[in-house]
Structures are given as structure tokens and as C-alpha cells.
Length: 317
Ligand code: AMP
Ligand code: MN
Ligand code: MN
Image (cartoon, rainbow, N blue to C red; front, top):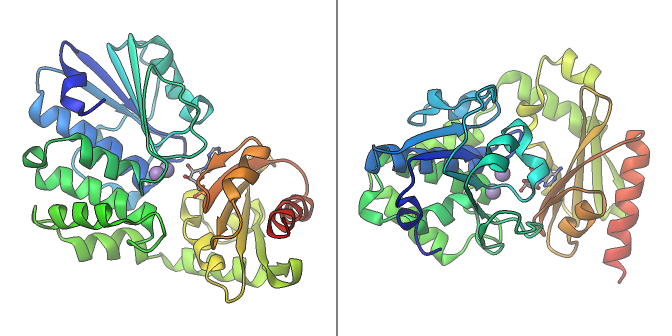
């Protein structure tokens, strides 16, 4: 696949889908594709399916067109899966993937197992949004499309900070800035600004944290009871693991929060020596070398112990 336009020839209906609990890159890249198709291929019926998105992303053009119910039994000529490394992470929208005449996956997860008919997977690229930038014609990137792509790039690079950020990322960001987007407001409003409740639960997570493996790993957990007490939802816990990661001296950070069913959502971050994607894959999760996740069962202390043992093994190999 060289560009998105050639994939759209002869296509009358398209479903765009991302991963469960969509993050900035997932929302940004899916809406970029949706806005590109609706602006330049108005004859195509495009639908975008994502679980409810965080409010901070609702300013993006056509965010209100996102469908979170998958009740419709429509089948599509093409299903484009974005920012999703395996079929299990499609959630309820998997039915549109399974029934589409053709499927394409555009993604950057090292754990991606090439599950679509056509796979455009670049694990070294900072974000799926950066891949979308490369797949659409520069002159067809409207200001609204630029905002979507910029949001995705900002979120998956930690504001152009993580090692996945490349000269190509920065060149793309430069092109997007020239489209007239309010880049500093996008960063402030979608990345740095937190509600009072979010700051309080970050504080609680830090108070709960402890060092393991002689200071090489920092780990913490937030229970359902704490989420209720601080009146926050899982989508409000973004950024906690990043704050853990910047603790002086640590090689890796582990953050757990309790799901409704008593299982634990695991987020891991590495400062370079540990490969957290490999560890996440061992526990049926996935992700990137320096940022990965999984869902695990058991007491949080045991889960942290199992993950720490894996990190310890890697660090001493
Ligand atoms: P998170 O810690 O949730 O911010 O996720 C870090 C990275 O790992 C993201 O790229 C996610 O898409 C990926 N990831 C998180 N949880 C899972 C999971 N259960 N299965 C596969 N990939 C995951
Ligand atoms: Mn994502
Ligand atoms: Mn991504």
C-alpha cells in the first residue's frame, strides 16, 4: 500500500475502527481518515466506530459522528483498522472487520500479528497518525485533518519527547503547523490540562507507589474503591504511568488499575533497558518496546511481583 486514495477506488462503503478504550492516537488517526474520506471522497459512505472518547478530543471535526454502538448489521466494502495490534482489541466493532469484503490495518505496534488482508505496519513510527500523514496527499490535508493528526502525534510521542520521535515526525509536525492549527492550545488542552479530580488521583497513585528491584522499578495500583472515592473513570487515569516513569533512577514503571470485573489493567513504561512489549505479550497483552499493556488477574501485589520478576530477568540478562 502506497497511499490511502488508491485503496478507496471502487469502494462505496468504509468502516473505520480502532482499539478499545481509544487514546489520542486512535481517535486522532481514525478521525483524520474519516475527515479525509468525507472531504475528498464524498461519494463514499464512511462510518467510524470507537468506544466513547475522552471529552478532550471532542473538539476534533466530526467527533460527534463517531458511533459507539455496533448494533447496525451493515456490511462494508472496506474495513480500515487503525492503531490496533490484534483482533481482540477491536471490541464490539470486530463484526465490521469480520464481514467486510476487504480489510486493511494501519498500525505501529511491534506486537501486531498482520491480521488484516493488507497490513501497513511500521513499529518504528511514532504513531498511527504519522502513518496516516504519510498515506494522504499533503495538499489534501485540511486544517481539520491536520488537527486530528497532530493530536495523535502529540499523544503517542509525549509531546515529541519519546524515542519514537524522529526527524520525519518533526517534519510532519512542521507541515501540520503550516496548516494553521493552534498547536500550543492543542498540547495544553489535550495533553497537560488535568481536572482537579485527576490531579488528586495522581497524588493517590504516587502515595501508593513503591520501589522494587532495588529501585529499578516503580509500581503502584488504583482500586475501584479509590476511583469511586475520587469520582474518576479509567479514561481519566492517562498520564499516571508517565509520571511514574520519570522517577529518578528507575528503569521501568508499572501502573495497575482495577477493572469492573476485578481484573487489573496493566500499563508498563520502560526507560530503554527493559522491553516491556515482550513482557506484555507473555501475559497476552501487547504494545511497544517502551510502552505496553495487558489485562491480568490476581491480587495487585502478586501481579506487580510477577511483572517485576520479568523485568529483573531482562535487566540481568
Ligand atoms: P497503555 O499502557 O494502555 O497506555 O498502552 C500502552 C501501549 O500498549 C499502547 O500502544 C496500547 O495500544 C498497548 N496496549 C495496552 N494494553 C494492551 C492490551 N491489553 N493488549 C495489547 N496491547 C495493549
Ligand atoms: Mn493507541
Ligand atoms: Mn498509537
